[in-house]
Image (cartoon, rainbow, N blue to C red; front, side, top):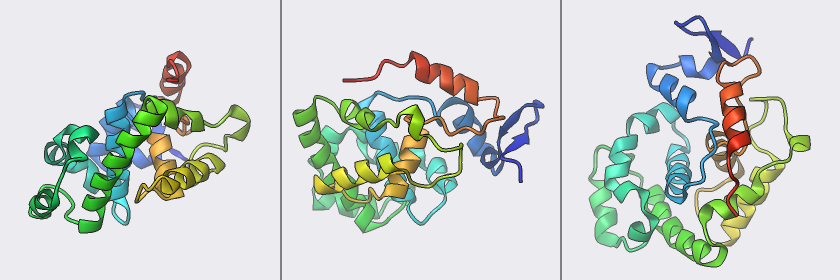
Length: 202
């Protein structure tokens, strides 16, 4: 089966983005484009954790609700969440009400603050795990990589939760640490250009 599909504009795109209308804008403007903003990186890692066992469509349609519930994923604020906040979030029908995942975001916010104090920024730390060209597999043929395994392992060592190698690999795909757009996808070159012009944090 081809990894691309022709869109209504006649252009080839990654096949997965045809599954629902919600995916198209996300695929064309976000997925695979490099991100150096700490809050956006934390948001995506948190949402990937919430996605565990669910579809990305479920999370994407609720993303604005998640942003409202978690103060725009400002980890300095989330780090101070209490048991009362957990109970509030468990009653919020606009998000995924899973106690373990909610508590993981709060825990991870505390770990993120510690990491920033140590490393300067979340972005500087995460981008160290960007794979070299020699390590890249064919687009969309992997669900983990040596780098996602290494980053997952190090985050877990620091006390982060819901950051398994598959979750971390999906995060790396989405945040542009790799360009996993299919070879024939019209967006692949745009994502590659953005990666080329991206100033790596450090």
